[in-house]
Length: 534
Image 1: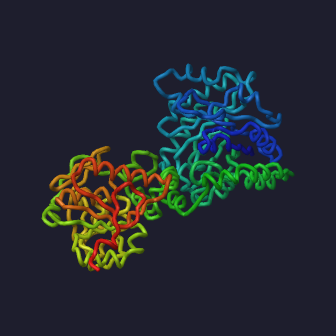
Image 2: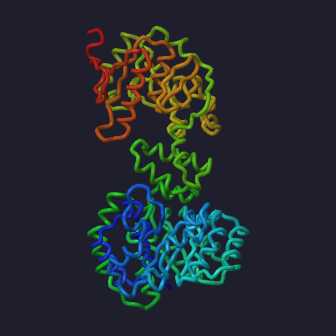
Image 3: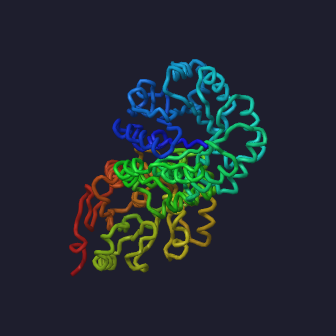
């Protein structure tokens, strides 16, 4: 059995592969003491866009600057995308590995492949073996492939002198029985050494690795504290204990636990890798964990948004991460939209009060309700905001697709008509709103645009406040009052997005907008207490 620790490669996504030299040397010593056999020091790449640290390139000169214990083998990983493009493969490899293995501290080269890249990447094995390197191929996202596909990949691999054929549980969706099944499929044609790289979405990374050992897998990946994108990986500090028992080996955990306490645990607390219920669901439904990671790092997504997005990706498919797909969960109103409801029929010449979700509504509820009773504005509540008495709210608006997915059940129970881009909503959302009175005002998302038409609007985003402002403008309201738009605080990206929206509206629309409760946004503000009869 060989333990391969790939902390500095897989964990580098959190710090741009910029690990301090002193830490790296301490880490190498700790790996030896803990019984690790191979350390994957990082990626080797020709792509140089934006700053990345030494472990993004892991050159021979960098490795030579380290104190690598003689007992450790050194690995680097290359991505198959760099060797299956338009440039000749041997030419790329010659640039990536200018030295033969006898003149390099690198012992092992691993190639990370998606299934569609595998066959074209395999000839790299021959080139690297001729130059003295051990070669591993890491097959990614294999768990959702059919038996026929997996056996076919094994058959292709058997044509080359690969030292270790790895498979990665990329979605973290596998359990021990599925792990055994994949291994048995690969074993139909692949008779050489096998490796496994497990993700911890469902808390099964170590269990799946141990099952793989029982099924004859001998190359075992792990990272310190599980450091890796999203839910992370099998944890080195746990795997070395298990393997030491199997080897009847004595190991020294003190150096490893020391660097965990000094560096990796504080960094984990800051960056937040490791499993949680969201990652568990992503593993259960085969959703790429990067979707969860991106949403957790973006304060615009709250708990309901994330859970609704998971439900959406479960239906629509989310096995391959795409920033565009994630963005579409917030901005999927593309193309021309045709609504059927005309706001002018209800709002023309009247004032509009838009109720947001900020604490200002509840804090000043009595004054707001008194204002509504005396001034009789058209009252529009965003989403399911319900601090103000239901009988005083005329309409609700909702358009954010992720939030709509989360709120369907609540909207069905609320008494007000719902203004929404009904003709553009996904079928599952419309089905969930069955029986609800919907007023279809169309919406198209187009950056830097704010246009209010008779039946539809073109907006810079799908924020519900943008949509409510557009409805008020389309309806020819004479003024717009805002309550409950307190702001999110300095540094929160939602504050900047909201301010940009308000600025664009004021620039393009000829309607006065005023907050009547406290706000941090740069808009005119008056007191709700001075706007009602005494």
